Amino acid sequence: MRPLSQLVYARIQEGAGSPRIVTLHRHNQFGEDVKDFALAAAPDGRIIGLESFKGVFVGKRIVGYTWYVGPMYQPSPLFYGDGLAEIERFLWDEVDRQADSGVASPALPYLLGVEQGAIMALGTAAVVPDLLSGIIAIGGAFPLVPGWEPPLAPLDGLPILLVDPPDPVTERPDVLVGESLADTLRGWGADVTRVVVPDPDEPSSAMATWLRGRTIRHHTAVP
Figure 1: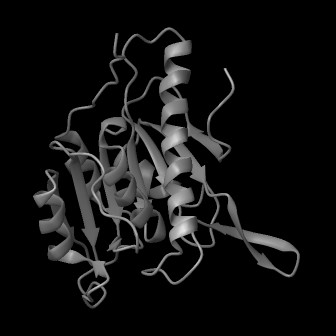
Figure 2 (figure 1 turned 45 degrees about the vertical axis):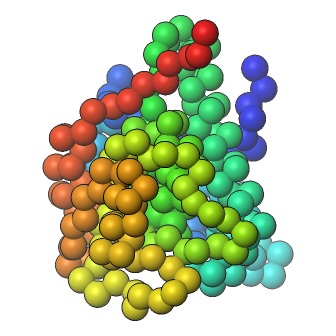
Figure 3 (figure 1 turned 120 degrees about the vertical axis):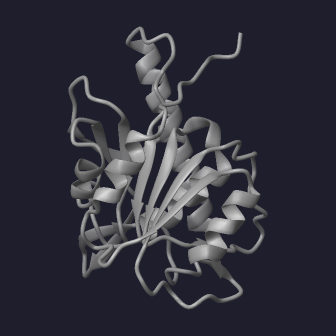
């Protein structure tokens, strides 16, 4: 079966481990560049490093990738929407790949995003929560993008871990961060845990502790 998504990805850690973790990198990084966070969260998990389609150029050389064009908290609606659509397609591809290998009830992954990747992970949660077991958003936020009214589907108890710095970005009318973000996600039906860590650039043991208390979700095909 031909994949729906054209995103490049690296299978960083295979084996029979659990859970499945799909990472979303920062601005100007590659798919494997936040693998240390995923390994800290799930040392025995299956880890996939997903890479955006939009290159960051220096001259004619790509030095990394970005999920969208524009400032961190003011993404271009076009590229933001395209990025979310490609991530959704990739999640469907992962379901199909498991089904093609004979798995009757494919395991759904956790999205782990850092900074810009965390913004994309939280956006994905508001679009297709039924394709996820949960979200880990490190240094994340939720920009209010013109023309989009989230959530597009009930979050229905989706587990979300917000890993924030001691001093998150100053709150502003066009972006949700910190406790405002946590409260909004709870209002949409998510099961939100927020932890503050001294240095969000370093993997935190809070992620593994949180994951141990979660239950992996599975996709059940509609007859």
